[in-house]
Length: 422
Image (cartoon, rainbow, N blue to C red; front, side, top):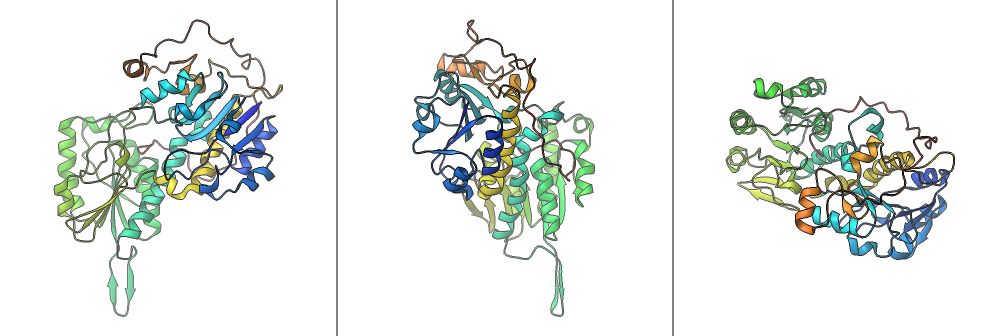
């Protein structure tokens, strides 16, 4: 069984889908690992480190993926870059499928079976595979670091003989995984932190981190969470009431960090031009949702915009700004999932197509898009979506065999909380 680890095609993407640690563990599962040359450079992992862990270095993409049964990636590769891949190979990564259904359909037409890690269900045994949480956690941390680098004043209160410097006031909008980490990081730097979210369940989480919770608490607010723990899209009426409340609050803040995302939908608009203009000169807005249209009206993807002496930070791929740390976590997410696809006794690929981890994450099979959330849109753009072909591959017997054993490291962190970012 061959597992290929390919390099990333997106400009500025430094993350990689495997590390020397996970290469060793994949090798212990009976796999031959081939890593594309230079794939780990952006995460400070040289080819030699992969070689010492037991991997072979592929000089080209074609050499790397040839005869591979599993292809691991971070972001979605182009269909043309997979020329020569085995027709029944599994492609596993973060596919960002919403709005890119045509690209997903094109990947399916190459014959690969595409899995999107973002669709991993929120169940106990899948926590270690949750790429949204692992990457959003780092994005929340980095958002505060980015804000501090633009903010030209100290974060903590400082009392000196020359006088006292007041602490910075930080307002976090969206208290999911990214938001909670932003709260914790800002507090560690000494800021006075407040936060808002449409889900009532996060009130205690915000307060436990030392933040003040700000929200319009009506009946709609009390029901504003999906069964999966995500935020629901709120009504126009609620959004208006919430906007009125936070507008006055934002005017008093030094830094605003927005993290609100709703899966499959454009990011909700939370910070208007007027709100930005109400902030004091030198204030900072960091928009973590800029890739989905942004929570801030003035945010521009990939840029730091200054408006009325307020800086609006719209960096793309924020987890990738700390690629080394992000890769460590992401590679372990993939390792945990791949382990469930391998028979622990025969050391062969044995996918249980009825496993809820598989049914939730598989996007294409037998050349067509099969995920129910994508079928209609993919059919419109490509004409190649619908039900899987009748000649399906023979069902795996993995349900009757013992899966490979994966033992995650013990963590000291709290149980996973519902995510807003990612």
